[in-house]
Amino acid sequence: MRWIRGAAPAGRGALIACRAVVTVTVLLSVYLLGAGWLASSVIGDKMLRAGLEFSDARPADPTEPGFRGDPRQAFGHAFSDVSIATPVGPAPAWLVPGTARTWAIYVHGIKGNREDGYRHLSVLAPAGYPTLLITYRNDDGAPPDPTGMVSFGLNEWLDLQAAVDHALAAGAARVILIGTSMGGAIIGQFLARSPTVDRVAAVVLDSPALDGPAVVEDMLHTRGLPFASTIGSLGVWLADLRYPVQIGQAVCVEAVARYRGPLFIAHGDQDEVVSVAVSDRMVAARDGHTTYLRTHGGHLQSWPEDPGRYRRELAAFLAGIGG
Image (cartoon, rainbow, N blue to C red; front, side, top):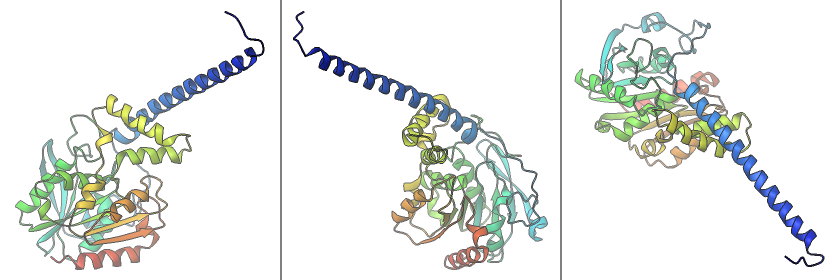
C-alpha cells in the first residue's frame, strides 16, 4: 500500500472519531439494556407482585388512608357481608343498602382495601345509593390470581364483572362504577371488554392508572434517570417477556374516552405516581358529559386538598344521574 504524504493524520483522526462513536454507542447500549432490565425487575417486584402493604397508622377518620373497620364502625351504617362468585373463587364484599335502583360499586387501587372507598361512601350513602365495596383476586380474604401477580385490570376486570352481575341479579337496574388508582384501570378494562357496559349509569375515577407503561415511565422520570422514556419502554418490553402479565397491554385510555355515559374524574397535577397528563389526554378525547376536578394534590390527594369541594362536586354529579 502506498501512503500519500499528509493524508495519514486525517485518516487517523477519522479512525479515532469512528472508534469514539462505536465506544459511546456500545456504552449507551449497555447502559440502556442494563437499566431496562433493572426497570423490568422493579415492575415485577413493585408493580405486579401481589400482596398488601401494611401500615402502623390507624387514623380515626374513616376518610383517611389506613382506616380499618367495616361500614358500621366507620359511619354507623347498616351493611351485609356478601360473597361475590368470581372466576377464581368467592371474594368478600360489603353491601351498604340504599333506596335507589342504581347501585354503586367501589373498586380500590393496587394493594388497597375496601375501606379506601369510604370517601365516596360518605357521599353515596346520603344520596341513597346501595353501595358494594368489593375485593378482587389477590386481596386479603379473596382468592389469588393463578399468576400470583397483579395485572392492572387485565385479569381483575373479570372480578368486577362478577360484582356487576351480582348487583344486577340482586335487583340493580344500573350501576355506577367508582375506582381509585389501579381501580380505575380495572374499570377501564371492564369498559373495553364487558358485555354489560350498557348497564353502567356513570363512572367515577380518582387518580386513575389508565396507562400502565406511562406509570413506569413516570416512575423513572421521578428518579431522574437519563433516557427515562427509552428505559421505560425497554423495561416494559422485558417485563412482558419475563412475567406472565403483559403490562404493555394495560392501557385503557381510549376505552374510558369512548364511554358515552357521564364521567366524574378527580386528579391532581402533583401526582407523583400517575401523571395527570394521562387524564388530561383522556378527558380531551371525550364527547360524553364530564366533570373534571383537576386539583393541585398528589396521588389520591384531591379529597384532602378540599374535602368540601370534592363532596359538593361529586354530590352534584350524582344528582344529575338520578336513581
